[in-house]
Length: 161
Image 1 (cartoon, helix red, strand yellow):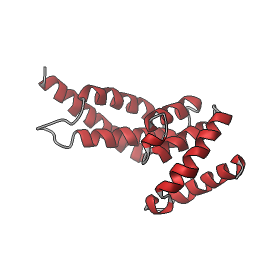
Image 2 (cartoon, helix red, strand yellow):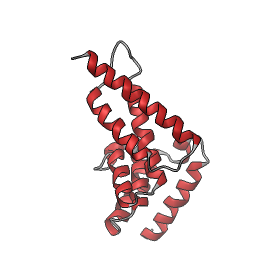
Image 3 (cartoon, helix red, strand yellow):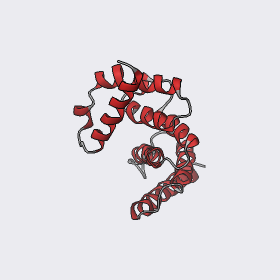
Image 4 (spheres, one colour):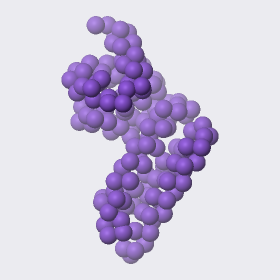
């Protein structure tokens, strides 16, 4: 199938995914690893300045990080660098950091999973990225949550010194 057709399929699939609660059923692993990810890689090879292609590569690789060279967060960063106004990439990056740190902190105050210093840096970056998102009530809630997580990580680090 030509790249233009595969790219159109991936874009249509992405639109359907937005309205579908169980994406694993709509996008089974073989479809993602054999069609979607190779299509996105080829798209990037042909158009290395496509923020959309990097955003989608990060999005679809969340369930299959070994299938690509870059991590999802690197893909989202690249999409944001290429298009600083890309709301999808900004939202995905902030969500990724938030979910990661929420897991790392779920044992607090007794334990912190993983390196808290890396989480501090990731949260600071997420707060910076968040500033580029459209202002909505949800953005304020997310910012408060990120700041709370940042405070918890910094407190954990302070208690260890």
